[in-house]
Image 1 (cartoon, rainbow, N blue to C red):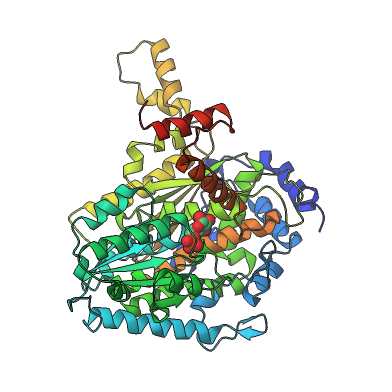
Image 2 (image 1 turned 90 degrees about the horizontal axis):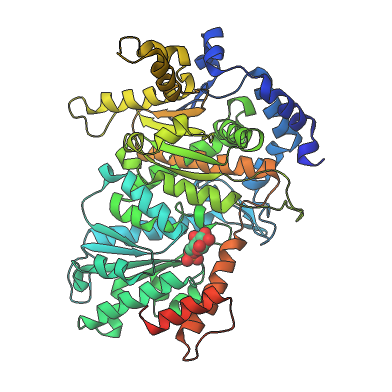
Length: 545
Ligand SMILES: O=P(O)(O)OC[C@H]1O[C@H](O)[C@H](O)[C@@H](O)[C@@H]1O
C-alpha cells in the first residue's frame, strides 16, 4: 500500500474539499438529498445528508476505503486473524454475539462452544440469584449487586444497564463502583446490608489497581459485619481471564466467569463482563441485545460500502478529521436513557484510535482519533451548543433519537423531537447577515447598531451532523447502535493503518502510578523527580499545605 496521504483518493479529496458547496445550496439543488443520503438497517436509520458531501467527495471516500483495503481488513477481523499486532491477538467481540452454529477459529480452536458454555453459566447464576436459590451467608436472599470494575469493565455494563432501565426485572438493585477514590465505595455501601449484597468483580487482567483495592475494601466490609472467611464465597463472583489470580485472591473457581484475551476491555460488554446487565434485565433481554449487535455485524460484513452504516460513519468522521482539521466530535443523545452513551463511545473511540504510529511503527503525518464528547439533549442546548453553532472550531455532531418514548407524557416527546431536528437544521442552514438584519427591522436601533448586532447573530451554518433514528430504544436497537459505533471506530483505524486494539499509553500510566505510590509510602522525603512532582509528593506526606 502506498503511504496514505499519497494515495490517489486522498489527493483527490484534499483538492475537492474547497469545491463543495454550502449545504444550504446542496439541499436547494436536490430535493432527493435525504433519500439519496440515508440508509436503513438493523432497526436504525442513518441520515447523513447534512454533511459537507457531494457525489465526488463520497466516491473518493469509498475509493480511499478500497485503496486502504478496508473490506479485506473487515474480513480479517471476523475471521479471527491476529489483527492486534502488538499483542499478537485476534479481535473477536463479534464472536461473542454470533449465532451458536458459527465456527470461529482462534489458534486452531473453535471458540464458540466456550462462549456458549459461559452464557449458560451466566443464565444459571442469574436465575439462582433471582429465584433465591443463591443466598447470602445468613441465608437471606440477595437484594443488591455491587459491580466493581473500571474502564471497559465498568462503562459497558453501567451504560447498557442505564439504557435498558425499562427492561429491569425488579428482582435486584445494582450499584457500580469504579474509582479508587474511597468516597465512591463508602457512599455506595452506606445504605447496603452485607447479608444481602453480592459483589461482582470484573477485571479481565485481575491486576487493575482500582478494582483490586475496591474489592479488598468490599471484602473487609463484609468481614466486619461478622461474616467469616467462608462467607466470601457466597458474596463474591469474578469475571476474569486470570482465574488463577482470582482464586489466589479468595474467589472460588466455580464462582468465576471466563474472559478471553481476544476480547478488548472496551469491547467486552457482550461477554460475562455484561453480567450486571443480565442480573438487572434477565437473560432473554441480554440475548436480544446480543442479537441486535449480531445484526449490525452481519450488515457491516456484507453490505456494500455505499450502503454500509459503520463504513459511512467512519469515512465521514475521517473526512472532517483529516480534511477540515476538525479535532473533536460530539455525540448528542436525545433520550434520557442514553445519557451515558457519549462517555461509552468516548472510551471506545479514544482508547482505540488515540494512536500516532502506523502498524509498521512509522510516525503518522495525518490526524487520527478526534476528541469525543457529548451529552443528552436538550440539556446541551443550554450549555455547549453555542460553541457548536458559532464557535471557531468545526465540531461534527451525531444526533440520536428514538421516535417513540418509553414514557409518553403530554407534549414532552414532540418537544424533544422538535429540538433535536431543529438543532440539526440550524447547524446546517445557519443564519445569513441579511436574515439577521431582517429580524432586527422593527427594532429602534440605529442602522449602525443593527449592522453590528446582525454580525453577532450571523451563524455560518454548513456545520455537519448525522441523525440516527430508531423506532424505540429496545435491547435490539441498543445492541445495533453500540455495534455501529464499534465498527465505525474500526473503519477509521483500518483506513489510518493503526492498531485500534492496544492501549500502551494507558499501560504507561499504570506503571508510573506504581512508582509514585511507592514514593508516597516511603519515609524518605522525595527529591529524585522534577521539582513539581517532588513537592506534590512531599506535601501529600505532610498532609497539609
Ligand atoms: O478489566 P481490567 O483488566 O481490570 O481492565 C480495566 C481497564 O484497564 C485499562 O484502563 C484499559 O485501558 C481498559 O481498556 C480496561 O478496560
